[in-house]
Length: 469
Image (cartoon, rainbow, N blue to C red; front, side):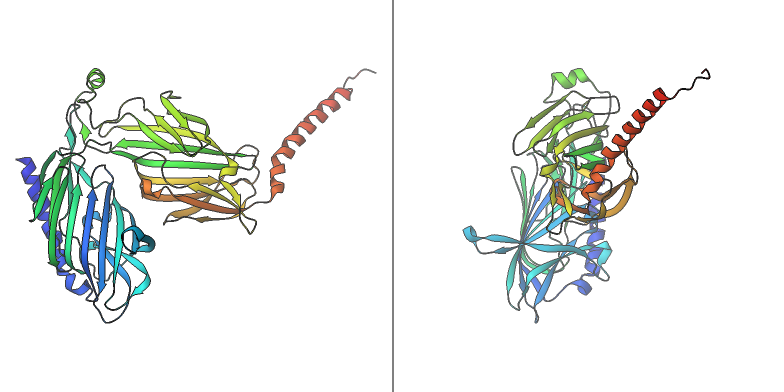
């Protein structure tokens, strides 16, 4: 009885959202553009939801258009990790894609906290003209486990909430939606005819002539035993030494964000029946590291963990790590990964004489979501005027840290970003000015210290401190 009641309550809330959206649709809809054809594909095979949206937009107004709006319902607003868009040029084999600038935007009197993203076109869309856009966006923490708790021998079932109709501020003449699940085990799903389930794919549509801000709530209840690996906090420290090395230290706070484990954990059952016991747990993680990595270590608060394997070649390095215990829903683990890299692969000199670090943003662990990522780039002592180039919005500030033999301290460039997904693993740059004379500071300090020490020893040996003559 609890499951149907929960489903009805969720549908009632979705209908309330739909009514709020319709209330403001007349004030916000644009009469100048319409979507001729829309196709949406939702990938639910992992806990990171990937949505691929193809839109053919036509200008039916009296003036050219330079931007196109994307609308998201309030249930997805806080879960959007990334939005990308590209314009399609050519057909079939000659088809190419040109990336477009996508930025969040505000619309006055937006209905019920609807969030918008503005896609800036490369060329204005002329009157009567059309353009085809490819949109890709990612949602995190959008799969709700139900039941909330499962035993060691049970599979994990989750809810997914969405709309069978694509939410848009424009009139959509024809649209279709495909939802792909990780297995054929679908407990239930909302039907909005025409609807069809075939193997692991649910098809909604085609629907025709839907007015702006149309919304039809749906819920899909299905099995998903993929690892729900979420890093609650990751601190990556990148320390630059001009003596030839780059030292990386990564501190993880990992949690299994799936259905919480209930009951007693039996390791005997877990190891004797691996295909039936703990199917939603995970005990291995894969970290994709840069090539030519060296001095790799993996440890936690107890000490070094020997259950890791490193595979390297000329193009990549893969570190497979195993926590001290398998992670079930709600269980957590903290650990540290450290490694060294050759400086010449990541530090370069720009045309204006400045040094710059070219390194990868994001989390090295495969198929993980990072709630909060902090990257600290520790510059050599004496570095001045640091600046950064990051391909997406991130908070930035400066700190000062002290290490051995430092006098004035080292400048630390701190980058912070929330809701990070594997698609954020793209290069960023940190530029700074550095006078090579500062490289001699620490050697001169050591040489001076040894000189004065031996001078003091020599003076002591040659001084007669006796009171006899």
